[in-house]
Image (cartoon, rainbow, N blue to C red; front, side, top):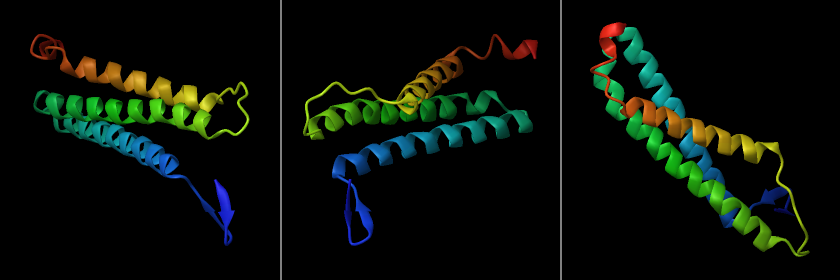
Length: 117
């Protein structure tokens, strides 16, 4: 990231990483809203498939960005030194893992469990 004319100019890989992470985050938010509306309406079973697909698509986007980021970041460092990423990188991996778990839970057979509610 360098300063040109008063603006920060990002490398292409930084923009791609940001776009992938924001796209995945938007899909997670959208799947949450669809699931919330489905619970409020009372037709949860109909929305299990679309919510699971959105969560798995978000996991793919986020995992791609979280693999791309350290590879390109280490490649762009002039000094080849040991570098640790901050807590935000681990938080992003945690969110990706929880999104994957949510997608798996939405893929479980809802027919057997909906009668209990």
